[in-house]
Image (cartoon, rainbow, N blue to C red; front, side):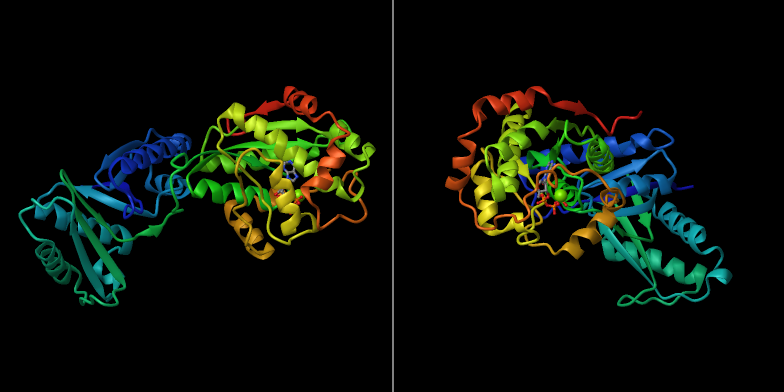
Length: 394
Ligand code: ATP
Ligand code: MG
């Protein structure tokens, strides 16, 4: 009997030399995290250009694999030895598992696609395909259709074994988490920032999270939400840390300093300033927000520029050009929408002016900030940070 496994493929076209090694290393790390939840120990074996998962039931392996960023194809397969008799038997086994008997299956147009990752294999790909195809015609009585088959049988010849499969599912795609470095996400409780975090992970950034609360002026509800969001996002990377920083008093100080209709932008600058200092401690190379151009008054181009001026690291906005509906659809897909829509006490609505200034400049803000002791404030805020590890099993 051929043994079940799951093949994972990744977009390897742009991968060369050292990059490839790093890419594969990060991918394996993500995989190790993803399979931790499986009911049996999972074996992860690397072949040139393919990773093979085995050891746990296939549906579980498939589910784990679908969570892993960097995997572009998830392919349930049967693994067998490199003799043609075994390959033919494995194809029979796969077809029987899927369709029952030839009578039950009826007539289906089929094609065999063969690839050799080991070019030393004595038969050519065409020969392998023709051999397997003729046996399927004999046993199942199906017609061959190479252009529009209903059943596509893939035979992949590797160095030590052959894989047979009937389906290829699309994986998450993207670059494995960590391959592009590390970033700190400013996570609020809304729809946008969790999606921004996910898209950043999809481009290979390992993410840490910081959430600012209005404490002591607000309750803990926004922290609970941030915690639940990070827990959800952690499924894609593992080891996520959530840093919670209360800024209620600092917000009040800004209001007292006369921020007026600059209040929101002043708070945002304080957030990116504090986040920059935290990022330096964590070794993160960029900040990430869920800003989308023009979505709300605080996200005009001028205000983004004013906020960015206070950041000491590149401020990345993965959703800059996304529409709200696109963001919400993505939030549903990655499982953060249900959490984001819960009510909370958002620190931004606290002390929000009736009209938010839309065309601010850094010099206006510097005027307000001059009345605050920023040099002391940022370290003081950082001293109050609370760190949570939401992904860890309770
Ligand atoms: P979101 O849906 O992410 O809450 P939003 O549409 O509500 O975004 P804003 O409230 O203007 O937009 O926030 C813009 C970005 O600033 C957020 O996406 C987030 O990255 C950051 N941000 C806002 N509030 C907080 C907060 N309390 N803690 C951490 N980051 C925040
Ligand atoms: Mg918000």
